[in-house]
Image (cartoon, rainbow, N blue to C red; front, side, top):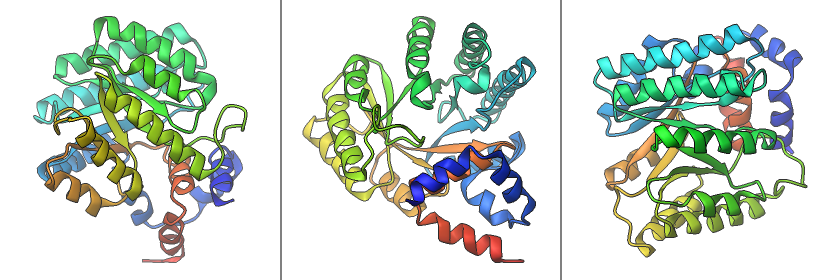
Amino acid sequence: MLRSLFLAAAGSARLERLVESVPVSRGVVQRFVAGRGADEVLRVSRELADDGLTVSLDHLGEDTRTIEQAVATRDEYVTILGRLKEAGLTPAAEVSVKLSALGQRIDEKLAYEHARAVCAAAAAAGTTVTLDAEDHHSTDATLEALMDLRKDFPSTGAVLQAYLRRTEGDCRELATSGSRVRLCKGAYAEPESVAFQSALDVDKSFVRCLNILMAGEGYPMVATHDPRLIAIGEDRARWFDRSTSEYEFQMLYGVRPEEQARLAAGGHTVRIYLPYGEQWYGYLMRRLAERPANVGFVARAVSSRR
């Protein structure tokens, strides 16, 4: 019930205005978002790298409505990649990009050209790009763009969402040599016709997809905070005789930092998904939908005057 409510809230402009009108303490945003600008996210990236973690930066903004916004998002990614290189943070730091933020809903060809520019900037910086997943309507277009980008930028990563019924098939197609694939549960409101609805069915799908990726020749990126799925990920890596350089775990900034440290101390590569920017509202609502236990933290922060 809570998950459905927060997913609905993520798309509500009225609720967004209401939330923004509340004097929310800085601790709410700072727990889940690495800052509103480049200087802040670079500082957080350095702190995480010093702790033995890697990062994937995401400039928040998937509601791009104009070409000007799409160009600004492209330019932000190109700029932050240059600054990551200057700071000596690549290749430990990559970027995650939503095609919708680059103008996919306006002009798919334009968004693709913007993605190429970001991939070229990443290659010049000594790192790479992961194309983020969105709702199921964009899955085919995103995977088609991925295949085209990989012709010139073969390390471009994919994101597959276990709650979609199609994802096992997508895993089989993408579990190829050199293919970087982030497997996550999924964080959008989807109909039963295309997505599993119960947590148990989503978890079962996650494990089936994980087995396919671990058995394949690609590079699985296991994106979960679920203790059982993390343990299964560790077990599957051992079962398929993968070294710790042949897969990684990924977690969201601000969620289970002690577990992040435990995995890194155990020799695993742990990448932190690091969002930054002004458009934090939709992102925050989806994080609450994924992990309702976070509601208590936000409620305390909202009610506090300190």
